[in-house]
Figure: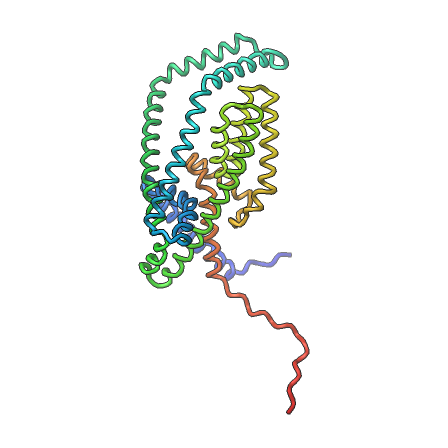
Length: 372
């Protein structure tokens, strides 16, 4: 038979629950205010984030020039920034030229692929007649014509997006240069500006976050480069068009764990299907699966020094949440943000935890006392 409730314990439990709920509400309100402020200042924050990500890639050669060769900070930062800019422009040119030259071939392949799909759909088991397909295409064309105004708006929006992207890139490059030149002086300066314990905690968290972010970006770049090389080699051997753009897409997609690899693989198989047919598409699918298995079981364990400490399920949920909240940008930033949150949480937990007690020495025979 159950006993009666203790009024004092019940009131204490309700009081504790109310206090916890009130604190959670305050935390959520503060989080909402911070996110609102970030949204208002996103035009400034986004170039800053891009510059930090680029700095994690370009800092190792800058550090080599400064520490090993004794170059002045401004000269080392200028040379690395210029080389990075040349590599970026050269990569864009190498992508645009093949796409432009092979665009007619790709277009004809898409048309041929659509025709094959129509022939397949007209047979069993679907048995879709040409009249039905034509009706669907006519309705699609009518919808496109009725949406001409929306298409113009989307075009204008796209032009504005390109302009914003150029401005963001220019700002990020300038910020990257200053980070490379003056980065090592930032933490000492931050320590002098903060009062009390913040002078120790904030620089410590910033240093850990920088190490985690740098290790993550560099390891993903290394794994993405290996994927791009091997998958690009497979595309080239099979004879799939647009090898270089697809390889670059594979490299860029590596910065979105799990989802990026699926997207890049889908695009590669689709291009192989519409240009070379089912056989080559299945071969490319096998190559991608093999490379992804090598990446997951060989490459990534070799570069696991990034030490994110995030489970694969957490990574997948973070990418999904980031994509739903902020699209492609959210997917790119989801895992680094989750890793930085884990760094902050680990530091706070360490500071709030009691130190481990001194281990008790194992019992053993007492040493013999010297006799005089």
